[in-house]
Image 1 (tube, one colour):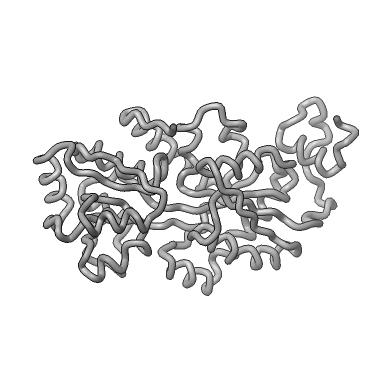
Image 2: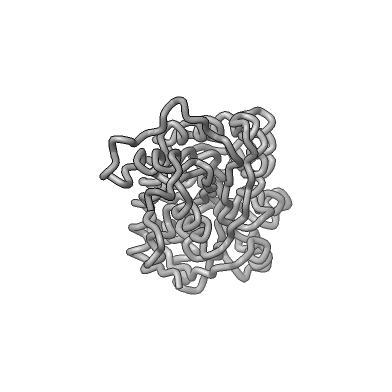
Length: 329
């Protein structure tokens, strides 16, 4: 097999700790040119969503920085694991990477027999966070999260909340809220956000956790009331909306976060170049403004910060998955 490896692939493989028998040749040399061909960026979900918009907005900027085309490919399916498997099986040469969503640290907790392990990936940067709002129908008659909890406890098991699917971050956020508030709510998974909103407006649902962009117009029109914000601080757009922490639920986390990751055994110099290219691209003023329009806040964290955040998410979600007995059928 080794005689079929190119010199660059051999160096890339040994740099990641794979092939310990040839460690003396590991590492990417400074003289090795990279990149010399187009870079593929795999999108784990379909076209048109916020993550897709982000990936395509950054692609030409990163392309200009690296001097090679950056091509976005949608590889939707199986809660993002189709794209993840493709990256895990691609050569560790820096030419295949992927965008990640908030379900990135969750899928391995819910799905068994995956063709990869999570340590196969190296997080490069958490690029954006997407605050969410715990929303209820205005006609429900509650104005605070305390009033909602009291009303839900008065009729256990009779109220329900909707999410965009089992294992999503908003599903986890709903379960964290149920656990910490001590309320009995039935989870109803949906395939699309518009259906959640339609049922919320008709009071077929009593609660949902939705992205700011998804629910903004309904809060402004008075059809829906926001009770708590999943973010570290209040948003200027909704100055009277408390955060979950302010409302007494500091452990509830349900934001829609997007980042970029690559194979863990990709040479460190290549990972560093990609990390810097994406962090620089997402911080451009015109990009920050465009993303704010779709409810995303730019953070552009370091790979170390992203890794710590993912570890915290994994610990938080693994506990609620265990206690709530959540399974992805």
